[in-house]
Image 1 (tube, rainbow, N blue to C red):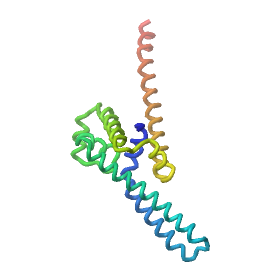
Image 2: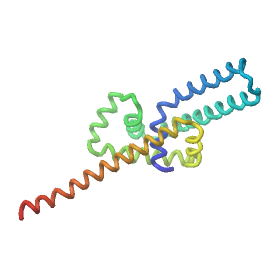
Image 3: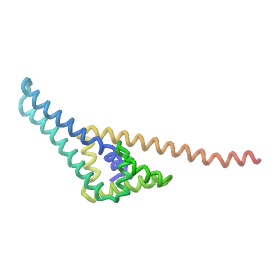
Image 4: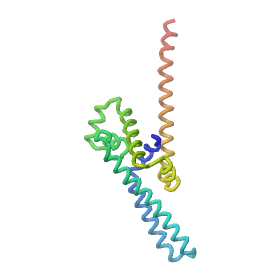
Length: 175
């Protein structure tokens, strides 16, 4: 599985509970609105079934994420929780500060382990792409994650260019 897909799942993970509640409310409203609707019952039933299928996909992914995160080392769990969760526990802050500049390397390794564990549990890129087509949250998160990665790479290129130009300036000043 691509790292970008694993990051997308991790960014969406804290929001999955909210999505499940929204899908519940949506199914309930569809069922209650059937009273005054003139469409055939089969069409309304099919819409409710589609919402239930989407909810089932999100539940399966949430349970799989819980299982995979619990299989990871405590350090990886703390790194993922700190990086991708909105709640930042105090004990993880101490650990993160102790990592120093290696923090982002450790995040990349933890994401790679998460992706490998997802694949070993049978969750493939095709399943994630299907989920993106079905549930709007994941397609939006994928776009946002790709944008973050593009920004991070562009920022990295700018710093590399600045570092390369510094010795040339020293040479020009010496001459």
